[in-house]
Image (cartoon, rainbow, N blue to C red):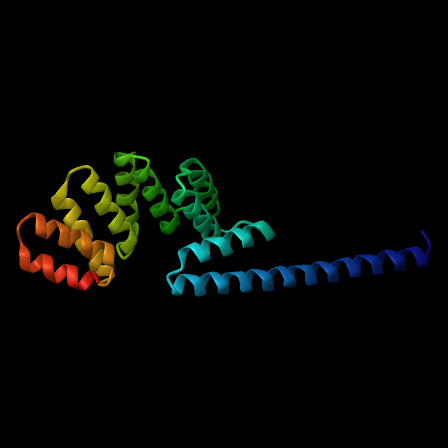
Length: 194
């Protein structure tokens, strides 16, 4: 190989490395922009908008547990539980033990009517992360479906200890109090839910 061929090979290699760095930087910038849009939507309570942004980000780049979890939510909402499970399992493979993903798996299992499995998953989640209000709420829904009203009430109460403004938990507790004939607590809880 001549000196000119060596120099050309070195220059091509250097150019390739420079292009790889630029591509990685561009990918990182796009990902950061997408995550900012998702966080903004979530902060505004727009889960559907965040899920849509997550789907777009997944189409453009490598998978990410949070993005897969949001995309799974879209599947779950349309009743595509198999699709939701597939995405959640992929998210779990990227982030083993992720309590947000595990909680979402519990929610999908509950909606499928696989109540005992859902409860086992949700019990693991709240043991691992006692400040996961949504998992306590899902656990309450599951226990209610299993007709364990006292344990469901406890789970809703634990959800409120984490997030005192969690309207679904307040509503469930208000409904339960009304059914037990506890008018004043039912009224107070219902007012807090609004």
